[in-house]
Length: 586
Image: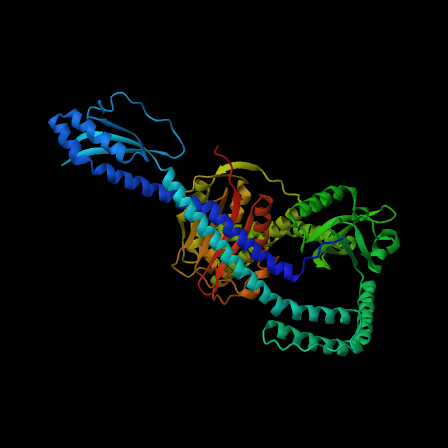
């Protein structure tokens, strides 16, 4: 039989706990405190009595009258025989003057030792040690404590009983009525009549709320079937959307077990939904990806955090016939009815990858085919303008300068395109070495000062003295720094220096390049690192560039294990920075 623990019992429980708390406080806190206080008062009283003997003791010591001194102590022991058990007097040299033969009493729980210095006008005449028993005072105090404790417990019990009776009358009775009514409603008896509860407190409000609920249930019941039909139709519509989607949409539980599999998934992987539901998602991914999948799922189970949620990943999928193909996977998580479900959207990107590869090959081929003739043209232009020392008409000289600048720009564009292509394909080999960062920054800053002069500005190292080392490809890092410095110079106001500074935190060094130009427009910030992108910020100077520098710089820094970012305030300043891990000193 299950023990019923109703409202009355729950109302009584705090009262019983309160009574237990009072008893605990009285017995284990208040009683020991009172006894200790009584003991200290007793000691103070006995000390005061001893102090009354000081004048006669000092007089007899000065007169060297030991017999009279002994008589004083004997009379005192006789007067206080119920408390004083032993008294000892020592002179300032700690020689015992009284008693001569009697021994100290045995220790008991109520025996108290009191030490008193006999002094007058800062002169010490001796030391008194008194052993006195406070058992009588203790028993008297205990009697008072017990009487007060019993009275407190009795008074609390009377108040608790009266409170329990009132709670039963005011709370339990009306709630019992409401319980019986709601029980009938839960059984479908909506015709039941509510009892009159005239209470103006929360219980009355609860009764009124139940009446309204009863009325609303009747109204909702008539619309329930219609609502269910609407939900059924909505479910069919959503199912139709999922089934007609060309992408694979798969739901999984937190253990990686497939819960749903749409027609798009059937077309991509070759499985029928009934064949794959309730099986592990690992059946749809290639074996080389399975280990990383287990790592992600294990990390999620241990930390409730998934590092792949909301991110697109390119993986190798596996069809029913065993063929592998490239897929783009995006995963999101949502808790439904207390169960965490993952929704994966999968797209076959085989054809897209083929197009990307063909595009990269085309770009590389075109770049190589263009660079050779452009290099020859540039060489010829240099010979005409500088090598032959020819005196050319002003118009011809201007046209040659324009042609030379355009050839240089085209060569830079081709070189940047080749860098992007090689970085994306992984063809660039990085020659990693450990370098000291401070002299590297100062050197690259000096190397680019001439470029800054073209825009009437300078490069200024504010704080570049952090003594740290990094593992980098020095030439590639110079490429990144030169790009950031040149960009800053282009957008910096005239005669306002570009600032370079470094900072170190948690084993990471940040190198920052700051200009006080117009800033980066907000609608341009999300695409800043994309290819062939340049900001139109209203700068009246022609800044030029290929639109590939930041894209290349970002890829280089990421290849070096760091990250590249920026901070900007419109019409005030922009700071580009990259971060690299610090290595131990050489």
